[in-house]
Length: 328
Image (cartoon, rainbow, N blue to C red):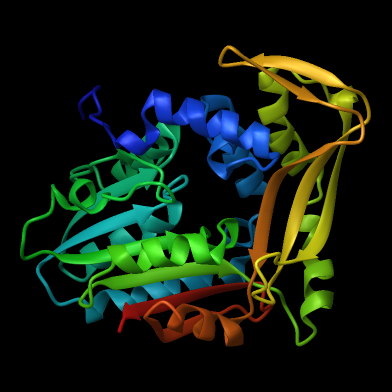
C-alpha cells in the first residue's frame, strides 16, 4: 500500500473561509459544529467518545441493526459498479461494513469519505482500506452545510454507469433541519440509494425520552471534547461552566434538542485570527446541539423536502434507527 494519500479539499474548507466561519461563530455566540472536528486532537477525542458511548459501537443489538440494514440493502443494488459516498464519514466504520456487504454481493466498489476534517477523512480511508486493501478511495474535505457545488467533487471519480449509495450516518441530529435537508435533497438523484441514520428519542413521551438519553451527552468525555474548542483558543476551564439542557427548536418545528452552552462567570478576551474576541461575565456561547427525532415523525419531516422512507430499521431500545430514503 502506498505511503501517500491524495485528499481533495473543497473551497468551503479553504483557510480564508474557515477563518471567516470561526469569527462568525464567536461573534454570533453559536459555534459551527465543524470546529469540534477540525484538529487531529479533536478528531481523536471524538473517536474516543464515539467508541465509548455511541450505541452503534457499544450496543450489540444496534450493531446488528446496521448489519441487517446493510445486508438487506446490498442485494437490491444491481449495478456492477457502486460508488459509496460517505457524507460526514466520521471514522468510516459503518461505511466500511456497508462496503464489505456490497463487495460480498459481487459489486465492484469505490469510496468517497467526505468530512469537514482532513484527519477524519484519512481515518475513514484507513479503516476502509484495512478491510478492503484494493479499494479505490477518494477522500474529500468539504463543508456540506456551506458548499453550493459539492456534486462535481463527489462524483468526479465515479464511472457514469456506477450506482450511487450515499450515506448520512449520525449527521442529521447535528444540523438545523431547514439548513441541511434542502442541501441533502439537492445532492440526491432519484435513482440513488440514500441511507440515513439518526439518534432517536425513545418511548411515546418525547420529552421524557430526551431526558432519558441526556447522559449520552452530559458526561466527562463529551465535556472534554466540546471544551477543547474554547481551550485551544486561549480560554480556560475556570472562565465559566458548561451546561446541558433540553430545548424546543427555536425555528418552530416542534422538535426538541440537547444543547450545550458555556456560561462565562468572568470576563475574558482572546485574540483569534488577529481579531479581539471578548466575553463578559454572564454571557454564554452555544457550543453544540443535537436534535433527537422519533421514527414516526421523521418520515413527515423528510417528505417536506421531497424525500421518502422506503424501509426502516429501528432498534428495540428506540434510541437508534437506520432509514433507506429515496428522492421522490
